[in-house]
Structures are given as C-alpha cells and as structure tokens.
Length: 221
Ligand SMILES: *Cc1c(COP(=O)(O)O)cnc(C)c1O
Image 1 (cartoon, rainbow, N blue to C red):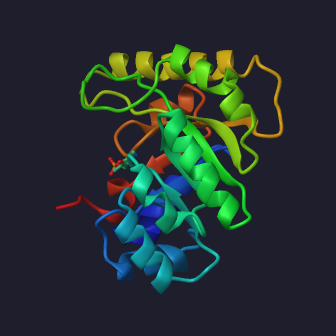
Image 2 (cartoon, rainbow, N blue to C red):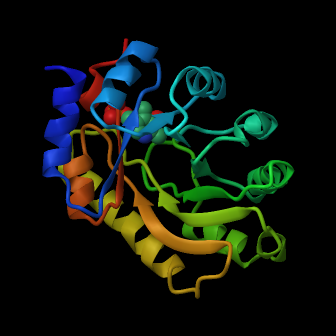
C-alpha cells in the first residue's frame, strides 16, 4: 500500500474530533511529499535537526509537531516555526520555550507529557508534578506559552488491557487538570495518545490526537 492509501484508510476510521499527526521521523523528504499530496498537513518529528531540515525544504503550510524529548538548549532552533510541543516535562523547559517564543513574538502551544507507562525509559510528569507546574507563579507569568493539554505513551506490550488501563489513567489526569478554570495560558483541549499499534484503543478511551508513524510510512529501519 502507498503512503496516500495508508493515510486515507486511517482517516476513514477517525471520528471527526480526532486529529492525525503523521510521524515522519527518519523518513525521507519524498515520503513526506507523498503524504502532503495526500492532504496531510501535520507532521511529527522527534529530533530538532531533522525537523529543521524538513521545515526548510517543505511547503510552509505544514504544521510541525515536536513529539520527542526536547533539550532546553535546542528550543531556540525550532521556536520560530514549531506548532505544538508534545513532550514538555519540566518548568525549566517551559521557561526556555517561553523565552524563545517571546523573541519571535509568538505564543508556542505545548502539551505536558504525563508518565503512564511502566517502563523506566519513558519520560513524563506525575499528575502532582503537572499540577504543581500549572499552579506555580512562574508558569502563571508566562505570556508566550499556551498549554493545550497532555500527552502520554503507553507501555510497549501485547497486553491490550494494560494499554487500555494506561490510557484511562491519562484521560483521568486530563480531566482532573481540567477542573481548574482555563486562563490565557492554559486551555486544556488536547489529549494526545495513541500510536500505530494502539491508536484504536486510544480513540475508544477518548484521545483527540493520535501520533501515527509506521502505519502511515511503513516500518522504520
Ligand atoms: C515514534 C513515535 C510515535 C509513532 O510511532 P509509531 O509506532 O511508528 O506509530 C508516536 N509518538 C512518539 C512520541 C514517538 O516517538
């Protein structure tokens, strides 16, 4: 199947309120062009350098989502164009994003990454840590940030019950954080969960944004 066909097949199954981020990491420009011709406009990358290279080469109506772990010293390279940063896991990182966004006179949208998986390797905040960030005076003073929701990754496992359980956990965190009243820099509407292997479960559990790579572009080497 072609990339366009893969995209179409996935889109045909998506409820209207679910956004598809096509995760193009490691894939060549030609593959992204094909997805673009198939009307895809949102791409996800996990490396700063790679995302910058692709941004330079591709049409400017593409929205670039940073889905990987972002180092503070690299925020400056993407601050002028990044559409949404999924993996925010500290107040210090937010401070840097706010500072760089200010330089470019923009507001950068972010999601807080919440740790839901068992694996030690997965980054993310606990619900308490996320709450503390949103409650902090430092955050409240950030004028160039908009927190739009939360992101999480389930454990890499065959156990569908466990995946479902972890997505339910993320949905609960999302709802609890949402009990706070929205402010100018926090309006939580995005629940980013679901990848190639588990996005159907994620959608059943209330995902509003799925990040799908291999099911669109084929396996990565
Ligand atoms: C690579 C990646 C994806 C997509 O993974 P697939 O299994 O190829 O769909 C989604 N989210 C994050 C954070 C990733 O790093």
